[in-house]
Image (cartoon, rainbow, N blue to C red; front, side, top):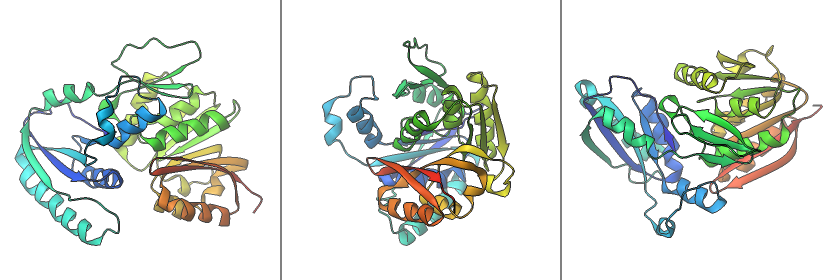
Length: 321
């Protein structure tokens, strides 16, 4: 999985690499995004293994990956002139996280090196390939792709994106969207990131999609990817959806960490129309019961759940409560 946001003048940078675990990958990347707007990359062999096992990786995957070292490397990029002080702050945060976190975050060892930013930008592009999720095919915008008759292509400029489609949580959300979105539906994508879920919903036939995020970079990325895909029935909002109950949909999709989903549970029904569906992911399997319990207590009815690797997703229907 790769999360990146780059600028045109990315030269003379310091690359900081942090060793962590599969569970720690997203946590460490979220930390690094607080200090860098130049790029964050997660290199996780577990994502490659998951793709190979469920058939979404179309290139040949050598069997040696199944016994490879499972250390996850998270990399961030800092302008050379300010890197020393920034990296010192990051390393202090890492020390505190290792003390406080109940999760296994691995060694959190750091390695630094000088890097040519222009060269880096081209190198990471080489790692992106089309990814098929049901009818949807996520295609990097710089790749020429010939679609099959029944496929729906979603173009993604990962040069400005937060997610690229290969993570288990994204694929489970797309699978549920394909199953539950109807042509008359309004779909709300909460915490839209790159816009991949809202754009997929639009291409699956939703009447309208509304994508919200509290990160301005996500809004920029989503608007850019909407243009790439000629989405004309979409709207992007820089806001916390729960602050505006006038925005309502038939389907809400949230791919956010479990603690945030639990915090949403008493309120998010206010943004759902009658009999509306909510799709939740970003949930580690060990937190699945807690999230499920929170939404059942809030009056939602369980439809189904999906588990891939260490991650899970839920589909629930708004009840009468």
